[in-house]
Length: 250
Image 1 (cartoon, rainbow, N blue to C red):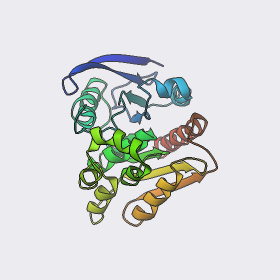
Image 2: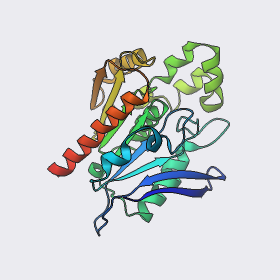
Image 3: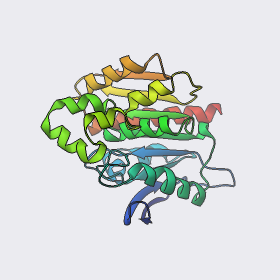
Image 4: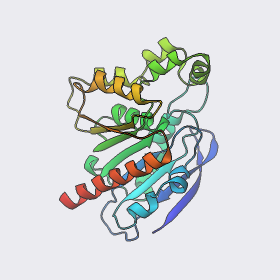
């Protein structure tokens, strides 16, 4: 099973960055189903490979896994920094789709991420309407607006990314705003969120689910776990199992 780490010059970011990729052992003429897997705050594109069993879990599947470097940018076109959202959606993902012949069928395209990456996965899934069959948030920081209330340190973290709270609430970075705007539209993507009761983001996830469950095709799984790799490893196993089931039923 090939595992690649690609050095890639991004014209959007104006620097050379990295991306880790797992490819199926056997390739054929058919387009390859793909899982885009996003890391959390303070990690990089190798985090999933180093801290979880993702490579072992997918080794027998016809599935590629793409793990981009999102820096600490919340997968956002930031106010005063990197344009991570544009980099992924307009440059890296289209390039890899073409280079490796990844499937363009929504039912064969998946998004998942942990913590900051859970927020990023839901944002990409909502803004790129019906581009993906399933989108997973694992311990996601889904209600950023609520996190602004945590204090000065959090505000300082968010200001360069989103601006002040009012800027954020009125932008396409606000997942609650995106969900509300799509409430009367035909959303075929299924969104799945998971969180542990011992997680510092548990109440944040509860609030997001309460506000959106009637507006979005959404499932919420709660476990007695914390914000750590033991939980995320168990959850990525569940994600892979669901992908395998989709393929078996396809």
